[in-house]
Image (cartoon, rainbow, N blue to C red):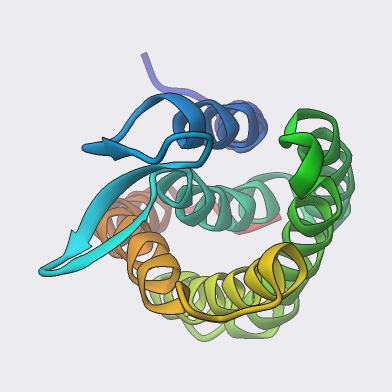
Length: 185
């Protein structure tokens, strides 16, 4: 069964929305080590740990781009606003502001980079916007949540892994779109 581009867009939108509760659940329940009264951590590089929720935030950056590609910038912007509200509702009480503001700023930074670059190439646009989004998310979240950037490396590396893992799928999507004559929304 082949899905229409619009149906694929709605699947990306659902996945984007699910990344937020998944990130909040992971941070408190899944990891190789869970800090008492703190986050669960996963290794993201030799000797570098990060809260497990960062993996879902990296994926959310890619899915936002796919929502925009399939449904348009209006849908993507609406998804970012809804995602920020959902992030505020689901974040641990001590992290509500940091979580919502970081999500909002990083996803709009992703949108601002992706939009002009998508005409030059989908994979380039997703990679570049993902890097910008994950750096903004990490900087804003860590500064607002903890007043420190001590865990910046783990945050950036963990999110970057998810963007890198998604790029071959994005490449395949672009090639399939070219064969089918599908243009971005």
